[in-house]
Length: 224
Length: 298
Image 1 (cartoon, rainbow over the protein chains, first blue to last red):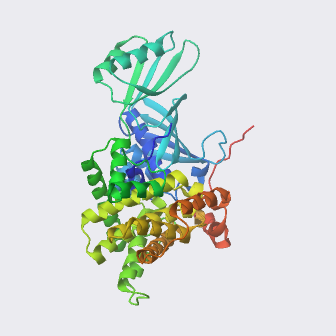
Image 2: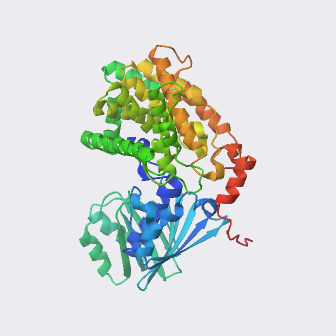
Image 3: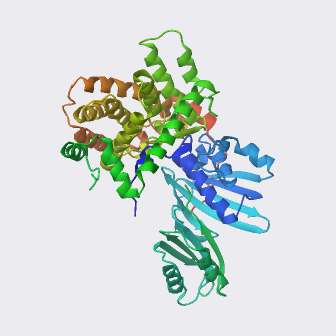
C-alpha cells in the first residue's frame, strides 16, 4: 500500500514547524474538514486524544488545527497567528483533551464542527511524516488518506449500489484505488469512501447526484 | 533504466559504468517513480533551498522564543558573540544551523530534510558552503539531489524517524546527507562522497531521541548544530582519502540494527534520557497540558 518515497519526501515537505505529525498532519486533517464543510466552521469543538492530549500546546497542534480549519495550507506562516485570526473572523472554538482512548490511534484528533445548519464530525489520525488517515466521518468508518481525489457518497443501502457506482466511475476512465463502505443499518444510509487515481469530471458527479437513492456527494481534491 | 536505490554500492556502480555524476540517477529515479519532469524537480529544489535560506535569515534576525521558553534566541547570541573558538566561518555555520532549527521550534516555515526535527542541518551546511566556496546555485541543488539519494537509501535500509530509530535516524541521516553534499559540491570522487557519508554515520551511531517534555526543542536544536559540525569534520576527513574502513552500506545496516534494538523510552517517547532527568520532568510538568480527561474504559 505504501508508495515509494520521492526526493521531495527527503528534501521536504516545506512546512510550518515544529513537527510533521503534530503540526503538518494536524493542519491536513483540519483541511479535510474545511473542504467537506465548504469553508471555515462557525463553531469547532476540538478533541486531542492520547499522545496528542498532553503535548498539543507545546507542539502548536492547537494553532495548527485552527489554521487548517481556516483553510491555511501546511506551509502557511499565518498558522502561527491562527488563534487571533480565528477570533477576528468570529470562529468559536474549544479544546478538549482525552488521555486514554485505547481504541484510537496514538495521535488522534476529533473535530465537531458547525457551519450554518450543517454539523459534521471527523476523526483523523496523524500517522507521522505529515501523512494522515481520516478514520471516520459522521460516525461512518472512512479510512482515506486525502492524498488522492476522494469521493464521499451518502446513499441508500440498496442492492447493486456499489457495483453501479464503480461502473459509472469506470466510464469516466477512473480507476478506484481504495473503497470503503459502511452503513448505519440494513437498508438505511450507507457511506461510500472512494479514493481514485485520477480526478473526476464534474458531469459524472452531477449524474450520480441526480439519482434518487444518492443523497449527497462530497468530492475532495488531494491535500498537499 | 534507473537505479532503484537499494544501496550505495549499486548507485556507485551505475554512475561509474555510465560515467555519470551522482545526482543524475536520483533525477532519473524521481522521473520514473513519480513521473516528475526534470524542470519540476529543479524548480522544487530551488524553492526548497530558498526556504532553507529564509529560515536561516529569520532565525538570525527575528525573535525566536518558543512557547515553552526553552528556546530563547540562541542562534543570534552565538552569531554575535565576539570570541571565535575556531573561526568566524565555523561560528557562522553553527549559528545558521541553530537559526533554521529555532525557526522550526517557533512555528516558522522550514524544509523537513529529511525531518522537521533535523531541519536546521542542511540549511546550516549548505548556505555556508555556498558562501565560503562561492558555489553556484546549480551546484548546491545538485548537492541537494545527492543528499536526497542518500536519504532514500537510509530510509530503505534503516529509518529516518526518531520514533523508529532514535535521533541517529533523524539528525544522523541529515548529517550524512550534508556530508555527502559537501564532498560532492567540492568535487570529491564518488568514493570520497560515500566515505563522508559512512564516517558521518559512524560518528552519529547510537544517538537516542530523548526530547524534554516531548517537544522538538531540547536537545534537538543544539544537536542540529553538532550534526552540521560532524558533517564538516567527516567531509574534511573523507576528502583527504581517509577510508571509513566499514563500507557505507554496512554502516547503514549497523544504524538500522542499533535503531531496532534501542529501547522504546529512547525513541521520541520522552520517557528516558534527558527527558527523564529531574529538570526535564519539572519542565514537562510546567509545559504539558494537565487538564486531561481520563475515560472510564471497561
